Length: 265
View (cartoon, one colour):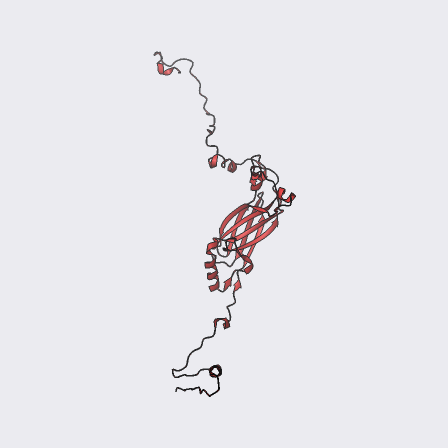
């Protein structure tokens, strides 16, 4: 059944009064049929409660190994399997000249080592080697090996920053959408923006790591790095001595005259 409403305009009343009356009727009556029947009214999106998302878990540890300058980094996470991570270690360096003259003291940094790893069944693990072997067989960090060539001296930080970054960073939006469908999200403190405005997700830990000390014996692995990775292949390897003792016969075994080919030239 259709109900008709008509608005009576009385003399001396402004037309906006009629409009107000119509709005009041519409707000009080759940559904008013105006000639064509009921009209469904949808609630605005802002009035619909947002879905609560749980933060992604990332529990990881950095442990020093028995190998000098080597650290094992492992963790557990509920990120999807086959998610790629980049694990890196860096140390901040402060130019000594700039510090002494009170110029720009913003530090630079050196990446000591980095590795790529993939999440498998909620776990991941890799190893970083922060030390290298110098030509005098002493342990050094890479910035110490290059410091003479740079003609600048640095005051290194006492700490090393270990980073775990979701890679590649250009796939972060797709990963966030996948997590949202599963009711998950990355913690806001882990999502950052680069100077170019590109977002990336990163976790970090800071540990006090002393500078390298001591030395080591030359290893075959270090020799292989010489000659652009070819090693010392230009050297003829020494052959072992023939165990059979060979003696020159005292007398000739034939009375035929010697041929010219038998003489040394």
